[in-house]
Image: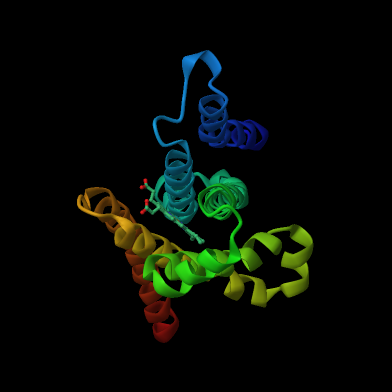
Length: 201
Ligand code: HEM
């Protein structure tokens, strides 16, 4: 597929949830965020953030399985979308949910384990977003690849955070956990195959 078409398509599609959030938030065409708009925004941004993290992780296996090499050209964009939705998620929590009150926020981070896990994931995500550009990639060389492996613990923390904040029905976090297990399992198998090949050579 033509890379420009692919990039434009992925860019536009990935922005759709954000556009829908905006339309809902501003009540366009009778849409709304529902009875509890802050909670709805928080949940939807968190859900999309985690979804984009998993989509980003799915790029390499998909590229290998379907042989569509151009897919790798949209991986950075997908990762940045994950960062965008999670920044929105964090800002919704800090500004709209907690009213920018540092005391309760710090107390939450210390006392509520799912918030501790969420903030850890977000802090780990920051260096990846900041070094996602070509200049950093060139400058950091091999260290860039090592640094960007942080995506694995970040995704684990994200699913764990989701799981822990769910009150009753764990079906959805379970689906996320199963998809993540598949994506990480795939890498483990590939890693072992590479080691065996190196050993045999
Ligand atoms: C890697 C980082 C993070 C990921 C992937 C993530 C993801 C999620 C997801 C998927 C949900 C549930 C959405 C749903 O119900 O559909 C959620 C809920 C939530 N997250 Fe995060 N989150 C992250 C970081 C954070 C941070 C940094 C904070 C705050 C400091 C935070 C605060 C919350 C809160 C307050 C809820 C709602 C809990 C409730 O309703 O009881 N998250 N998050």
